[in-house]
Image 1 (cartoon, one colour):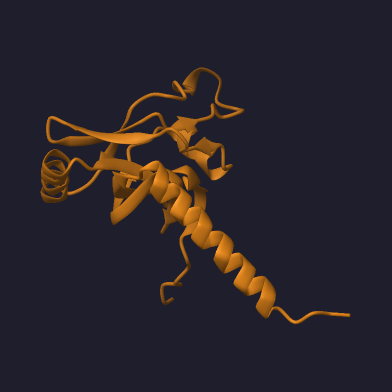
Image 2 (image 1 turned 30 degrees about the vertical axis):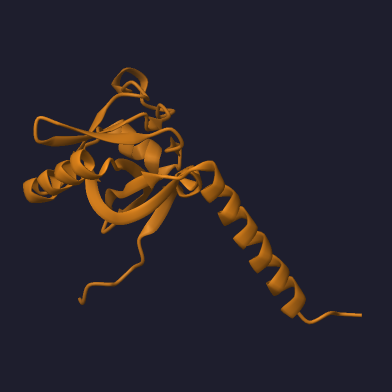
Amino acid sequence: MPEQKTAPRTVATNKKAYHDYFVLEKFEAGIELFGTEIKSIRQGKLNLKDAWCSIDGGEIFVNGMHISPYDHGNIFNRDPMRVRRLLMHKKEILRLFGLVKTQGCTLIPLSVYFKKGKAKLEIGLCKGKKLYDKREDAARKSAQRDIERGMRPKDD
């Protein structure tokens, strides 16, 4: 039977990251999880709001990602805020490490989704926005919203 192509199912997104940072590049990484954690993610009990990634000893880790304890997990539940290792190729990790050190960028988790049954984390190479950049983005969104509102046909 041919393999069915299904779109990745997004579980959580980090909207705050797009508000606070310019996303320069995006990368995909696997997450090293335990059984009760993956079950909890499948239920959608995941928060990326204050998460960030760090590179230590040639490995990449995600910090601050909250995965709520699984309801039926009893003694097998892990700490919801524990540091989790990400799975990427060594070349990618070394390239990211170089970019973070030289350009002053940070690595921010953007979303968690399932691809072929495996949980994946989308990481963004980000540069921080200044206050005036945030105001500019808000003004642009407001103007775009007004234009779309004006283009919509009126029902009288």
